[in-house]
Image 1 (cartoon, helix red, strand yellow):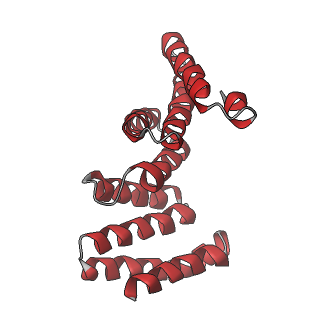
Image 2 (image 1 turned 180 degrees about the vertical axis):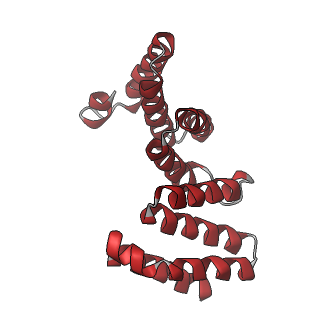
Image 3 (image 1 turned 45 degrees about the horizontal axis):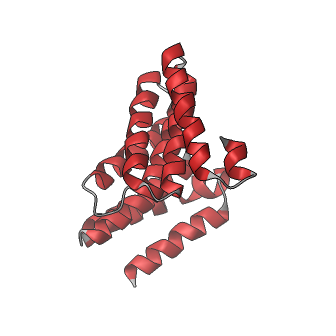
Length: 168
């Protein structure tokens, strides 16, 4: 599937190969492989502008990642869902953003935490609740030192830029 997409640029055939692989993984009971394949399929469907199929595969992958307790895959799935498939006006955007934030805190991942705060600010900007947005902006400011130390200054500056754009 990767060769078909990355070398030949054939996303349709790549999707077909991954769909077959998904069926085989399910038949063989290979849950970790099924999880990886679901994520790959969801990403490819999103790249091919098949958002409903992408969304369905991401939700399947999310449930499987939760069942397997695979927090690393769950972080990737939620990040891709919020960044690529679930739009801010979708009723699930807030719920998924909160889940992503909680997962970042649970795993101690500051990249996830700062991204989740950005998604939540975006949501509160959309629903026009500035008090809630300010609350999350302050949460982002409160984790400045760990983000700069454990991630990068540039990542934190990107967050600050986003906050200033919101304020303006």
